[in-house]
Length: 479
Image 1: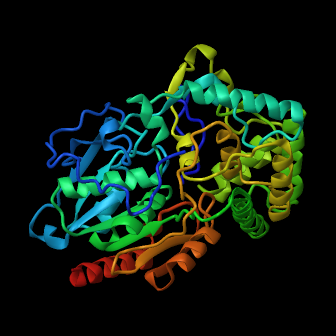
Image 2 (image 1 turned 90 degrees about the horizontal axis):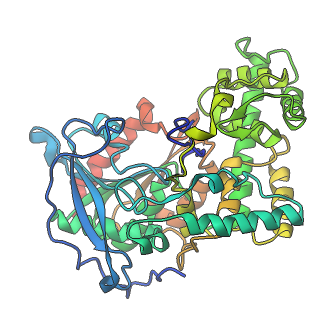
C-alpha cells in the first residue's frame, strides 16, 4: 500500500504513499474468459508513457466471477517480452502497488533487477484503463485522516460518506461492487490462460501483495517463484490495522529523533525534537501557519501527515520542514495559490478499493474514540498513522468487504514465497510481514533490508542477490 494522499491531477502529483461473492473453491474457474489477446501499442496519455517495447491488449472477464453471465468488463493488459535467447528464464506476473497504480508500474525495476524474464500484468479493477473508479472531488476532500471524536461531527461524516460513495462510478457500473483482491486474482488467472502459460512467477509490491497472496492461495500450483515486497496482512482487525501502523510510524520518528541528536545536518540538531513537533502542531491548530498541505489546511493532524510523507523520503527534508512549521512557516509554499477553479469535479480515486478487502469502517463515535486511545498508546508522539487511519473514515460507506477477505494467507505453490521488507516502513509495517510469514509457515522466506522507506529493496545489492538466486532456483526446479 503506497503512502497515499488525495492527489488531484489539476493540482499536484502525489507526494508519496478492502456482500461480494464468496471465495470457496466451488466458485467457477476463469475458463470463460477470452482465449487469446491481440497485442499492440499502448494508447496512454503523453504524461503516462510506457517503456519502449511494452505492448498493450484487452482482456475481457466477468464483472462477477460467481455469475459469469451477468456482464463483462474489459481490462487493460500489458506484456514486455525479454530480448535475446535469455528469455527462456520464464514469465513474471506483476501485481502493482496502490491501490491506484497501473499494471506496468514495476516493469522497469523488474527488467533491471531480473533481466531475461517476460513481464505481464493487468491494470487492476477500478484502476487505469480497467473501468477506473472516479468520485466527486469536493466530497473526497472532506474525508478526514482521523475520524471525529464528537457525535455531531461524526454523524456529519457518515452523511458525507453515504453521499460520497454514491458519486463514485465505474464502467460498467456494477464493477464498483467487485473490486476485491479475489476478483483481481481470478482476472490474473484468466490472463495466464489467455497467454497459454503453464508456469509463471509472481511479483507483488505493497497493495499488489494482497492480490498476489490471493492468487497464490487459489492458483499457486502454476507458480514457480513468488516475491512479495512491502507485504499486506489481510488477517487483522481494524484495531490491529491502525495500531500496528501507528507503532510502525512511531518507530520511524524514534529513528528520526536519534538521527537529529547525532547529525549536524538536522535542522533540529541540538534542540528538543519532540518539543519542536508539538510546537508545530500547536501553531497549526491555532491557525498560525499559512497555506495548506496539498489542499488540506494546516492542523496538528496535517503536521503528522507531513512528517509521514517526508520522513520516508529523507530525514533532512523532514527536519527542515518541521523547523519551518514550528516557526509558523509553510514548508510547501505555493499550495495556498491553488484556486477553486483548478479543482476538477471528479477524479480517479482508488482508495475505496481497500474497503473491498478490509473491514475498516469505524461504525460509531465510541469506536473512533477507542481506536484513537489505542493508537496513541502505540504512538505516544505521533498519535496515529494518517495513512492507515484515513481508511476508517473512507470505508464508512462502501464498498463492503468481500466474503472471507480476512482469511489467512495460504499458498498452493510447491515453492516458498520470498517476503521482502524494510526495517522501518511507513506504509506496510514490519508486524504485517511477520504475521504473513507465520501464516505461510515453512512456505515463507523472509529477507529484510535495513532502511527507512516503502519498497526499494531491490536497490540493495545484497537483497537483490538473494532475489536473483531464489528466482533462478525456483525456475530450475519448477514443474
